[in-house]
Length: 180
Image (tube, rainbow, N blue to C red):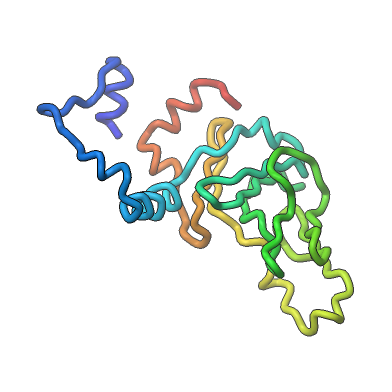
């Protein structure tokens, strides 16, 4: 953290002791690619949007990130949340990629309805589905934090993250930029 802030203040960067050559096979190996996706891109917080993109309650942004459909949504309580953009019934995408505004998210497949906090609030012709515990079938939430006008999301559900800690002091630096 401190080392990084010193580099920012001095306009410097870390420099290796010498030239390091990396075999081309490292960039082409599918197993290494999968490890990198699993251990870095799907686990660590990623900056996936700006607060201004979902400024109003009900505003959403849907995007695919390394093959995972993500839905970022500002709730009526003002909180930004991220979810898998997939209905809990048959995993149909709830909204197409892009931005929009909604009060409820309605699955185009069987019309299951979710509120702006991801809770399952309606099932069309619910008797056809039998006994369902609605409270356990809300959208799969992804760890999400809004800091300095930026929205950070981790692509692994149920793996809490601490973005401020991850940024190692850079959150304060970001806040001085006035992005929000």
